[in-house]
Amino acid sequence: MSDAPVIAIDGPSGSGKGAVATAIAARTGFHLLDSGALYRVLGIAAHKAETDLTDPREVAFLATSLQIEFGTNGPDSVSLNGEDVSLDIRTDLGSVMASRVGAIPAARAALHERQLAFRQEPGLVADGRDMGTVVFPDAALKIFLTASVEERAQRRYKQLIAKGIGAILPDLLRDLKERDERDSQRPVSPLKPAEDAIVLDSTDLSLDEVIDRVWNLAVTRLPGLAS
Ligand code: DC
Image (cartoon, rainbow, N blue to C red; front, side):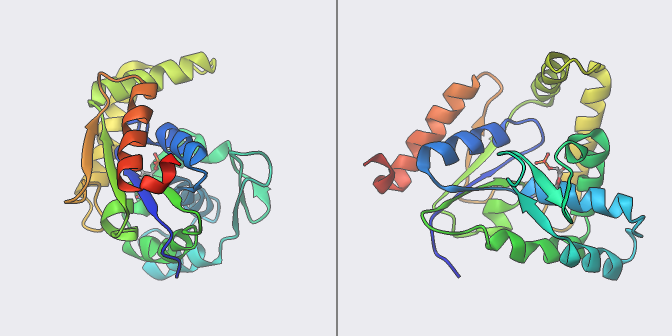
């Protein structure tokens, strides 16, 4: 297995970790793992196949048999068994199903190997909930990016409105709280900072400020990046 350096960026929904991870991957030239997208694809696949989520064997079989490809249809594209599901996985259904399958140990075990395979030279920026705690415990830098739930709901609201999608702020807030609860209370790989993670609260920071802070930490931990 590769021992290429890993920068792990974990945190709750809407903390901005996806945007930060993408920017840091571009700046470092590292590969990018959006682990949430894997859980989202599995969630959508389980929904389509009407998989019984109470049957661990059925879930594990589905998770290991899926053909998931990134970037074949544009930089953010994801395909499932050859079908472009880039938009499906970002719907509310995709979010809820991802969070539900993410609570199933057999699903997490089945996705583990797939995530490890993203670790390749010159390095990896991995974004998720358990990158620093479970999947890449030896990551060179672990960031736990957070923000108040109200601020995260506001950000999501603005994003949806900007895209012309109708949204109701109190509903978004309630959904985020439910997802936080499910992701952090589950017995397997709950959302929590690794002991050696640096917790960054982005409530009062702009995206650029967060990216700068993470970049500065990355250069300190991996001095080769600066050259
Ligand atoms: O990062 P995201 O919002 O795309 O993640 C969607 C869901 O997937 C999240 O609510 C929980 C699950 N997930 C997980 O359990 N473990 C990860 N490493 C990433 C996501």
